[in-house]
Structure formats: structure tokens, C-alpha cells
Amino acid sequence: MRSEISSRIVHQADRKERKLVKEMQESSIRSMCVVACARYPGCVDWAGKARKPDSEKGKGAEGEKLLRERRIMTFSGLIRWGGGALVLAGVSFITRSLLPADSRVGLTLHFVAIALLAVGMVGLHALQKDHYGRIGLVIGLAGVSIAVIAALASVVARIVILVSGSDALLPIVDLAGPGVMLGLLLCGVATLLAQVLPLWAGVGIIVALPLRFALFVIEPWGLTLFGLWWVVLGYVLWSRSETAAEQPSRVS
Image (cartoon, rainbow, N blue to C red; front, side, top):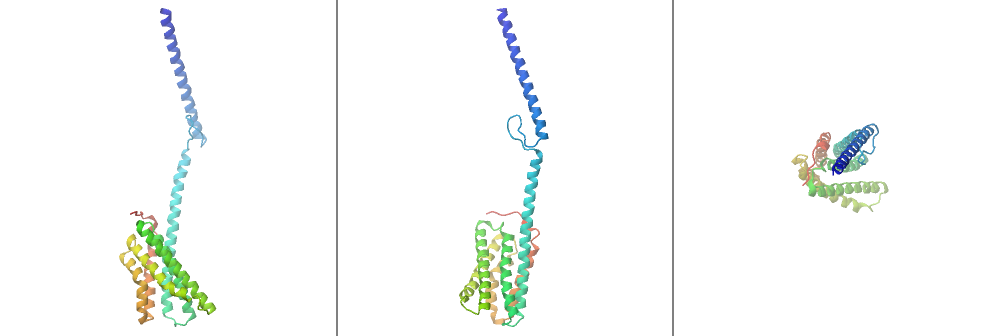
């Protein structure tokens, strides 16, 4: 009986000793792995899981920050170019109004102004795209797409007609005017929904081209006022280029 109790005690002590040795071994291995992971990035820790070194975590955060800064710079540049394009478009329209109707320089300026107007609409969309909301985004994309396509189609068709002397592309020119008007109408509505620019900016985009056609009776002042409007809007757009990309977006 005594020998049996003694053997149990010895057996339990032996188990405890083996358990203690095992824990010490695991602790030693864990310590070695921690040291190794600190020295050698990308190693596998004692539990078999890959461990990312602190330097990689820092690089990830720096990478995200760099991407965000690049995004801000890209959109700021696009908005700035759009604002500058609208200003130049306005100046071109004003200069065109001061030249004779049959002036080749005036016609060239008119083509340039329409093309710059298309570039300006892209910059306007870049300013507001994160603030439209879901419905406004659809309207804004449709508006800028229609305005740009119609404006560029008008320019190309007018140049071909001027160079070739043929009126075959005249229907494109006739359709481009209403197309640009529709695009500007949608862009104006999207501007009102985005609420980034003042209220008068959205209203002005909507009524600018209809007023231009209505003021044909007082030419060349109608074209002059039309150009002046785009100069003002272009300056407002350009002045927003520095802070626009850093503004929080709106989702609705």
C-alpha cells in the first residue's frame, strides 16, 4: 500500500516536471521567434502564423497616404484646368463678338471656345462628383457626356465644312446645338443637387445657352455676355481647385 502511494506521488511529480520542462521549452521557442521576427521581416512566429513587421505596417499607412495625396493632386489639377478652360472659352467668345461675322480668325476662335467649353465641363464634374448623391451622379454623368460629345461633334463638323466647303455635315451642326443645351441643362441640375457651388452657378449653367439664343437680336452683345458668364464661372471653378478634393463626400 505504501509503495503504491509512493509510486503515485513519484508519477505525479514526474508529470509536473515534464509539464514544467515543456512550458519552459515553449517559452524559449516563443522568445527566439519574437527575436527572429524582429530581426528578419516576414518570418513565421511560434504559432505558425506569418507576422508582418512594423516597418511593413508603416509602409502600408504611408502608401495609403501617398495614394490619397496623389488623388487630391490629380483632381485639383483637373479642376484647375477646367476652370482655366472656361475662362479661356469666355475670353474667346468675347473676342469673337468683337470681330466681323465672316472673319476666319473669329470662326477659329469660336471653334476653340466650344472645345474649351467641353474641357471646362469635365473640370466642373470633377469638382462635384463626390457630392452629387446617387441621383445627381447619374444626372451629372449624363450631362457632361452629352455636352462634351455634342460640343466636340460640332467643332469637328464645322471644321470639315469650313475646309471642304461641303454641307454634308450640316445636320450634325444643327443637332449639336440642342445637344449642348441639353447637356448644360443636366449639368446645371446636377450642380444644384451637389450644392458645392453657389445657387446662381447652377441656375446660370441652365439658362446660359437659352439666353444666348434669345439675345441674338442684340448681337454682338449677346455673345459678349455669354462669354463673360463663362469667365466668371471659370474663375469660381479655378478658385475651388485647392480645397475641393479634400472636402468630404456626400452619399444620399
